[in-house]
Length: 279
Picture 1 (cartoon, rainbow, N blue to C red):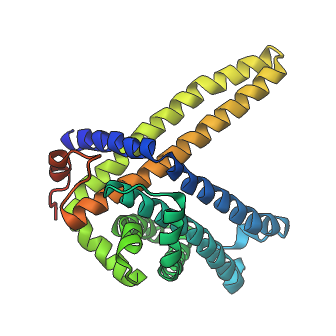
Picture 2 (cartoon, one colour):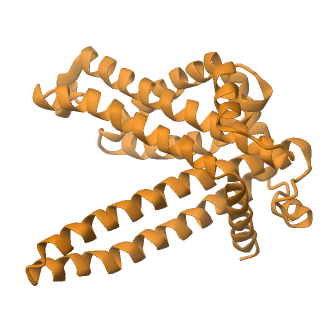
Picture 3 (spheres, rainbow, N blue to C red):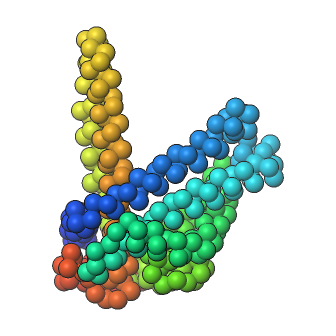
C-alpha cells in the first residue's frame, strides 16, 4: 500500500509537469497518428489480399515473417521516436528548464540512429514473441513470460537513449542496471497509472454506453451520434493523457535512478523512499 500511495503521488507530480508544459501532449498525439497511418498502410492491403491471417502461421512462410518484421519495425520506430522526444523534453522540465516541442524533436533527431537500432532489436523480439504466442502448449507460456521480462528489462531504454547517447545494446544493459534500484516501484507505478486510467475508461463506458443505447431506443438519433463521438473523444483523451503521464513518470524514474536526485516537481523524501533497492 505504501508503494501504491507513492505511485499516486508520482501520478499527481507527473500531472503537474504536464500542466506546466501542455505541449508535451503533442508527442503522444503525433505517435498515435503515426501508428494509425502505419496500421492502415499495412493492414488494408494485407486484409484485401487475405494475407493478414497467415502472417504468423506456417502458411505465411518467410514472406509472412518479413511483412510482420517490417510492420513491427516501422511501428516501433514511430513509437520510440515520439517517446524519446517526450521523455527528453520532460527531463528538461524536471531539471528546471523550459522545454519546447522543438527541443523534444531535436533530442529525438540527434538519437535517431540509436532509436532505429533499438527498433530493429524490438521488432525482432516482437516477431519471435508473436510467433511463440501463436503456438500451443509450453511455447505460448514461454513467450508470455519472455514478453513480460523484455518489457521490464527495457522500461528505461527510452530515457537512456534520450540522455546518454549510447547504442541500443548498451541502452538495454543500462536499463537493466538502473532497474535494480527501481524494480519494485517501477512495477507498482505502472499498475497505479493503469488503474487510474483504467478506472476512468470504465466510468466513461459505464455512463456512455447506456446513454447511447437509451438515446437510440428513444429514436434520438442525433443525440446518440453526438454521445458516440463524445465517448470516443473522452477515450482518446484518456489514452493520450495516459501515454503522456507514463512518459513523464518514466523520465522521473530515470532521473532519480541515474542521479539520486529528484526535481522540484517531486518531493525528495517521497521519491527516495519509492526507489529503494529491491534486488
